[in-house]
Image (cartoon, rainbow, N blue to C red; front, side, top):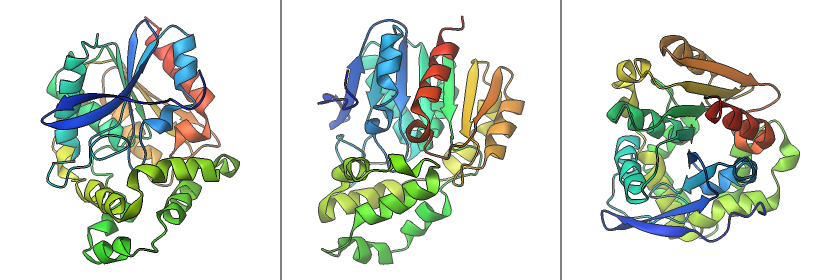
Length: 279
């Protein structure tokens, strides 16, 4: 398998098309990206999981990647959690493990809070937790002035994404023009950039904060992985969550930032494999 995860399949939920990729056979792992990424985030992790006899389902959340980008849909993490649960039911998913990065980790937490049998295992990577989101760079996009800024024909979203990845990664040599173009492609053009604004503005702190008591009580075996140099989601949130959950532990990856699947994909893949197969 190459590092290009290829052409997605689609499944309809609520009249909208959700893009997903499905590979391999065995215990099944669902991969949920965050903002401003897509299933492309997992391209360097998927091959290792498949080679270790795991099935992988990588989904583009509504409003992201190759999924539809409707104007009126709720793109908050609570709605995304319900939508993704429907996707997995339609795919006859067997419920092995859910892996979420960034807001995808928030989606994963809510899926498990909504249904304690949603997954046998939970992996949270540099996840949002408690009131840790949206981080200031995303929160500022709620200012109406950004409609005008991002609608300008010459606005360069690639430049903004490159700046964000530079802040959120330690291994800057991995932030190539090809990588930035791949993340910018779903949001290309004025309509795409306005879709990005809708996704950012949909993030509401209270949707997770008011459910954290339930999340903390989850009995699901949980691995919390964190880049030690994450500037967007401080590791203290992961430590707090791991201390509160009865069957959770936190593992830090040194010399890595927020975009851990980009910074250290092979380490992350190995940790997921070992945890999912640990019994």
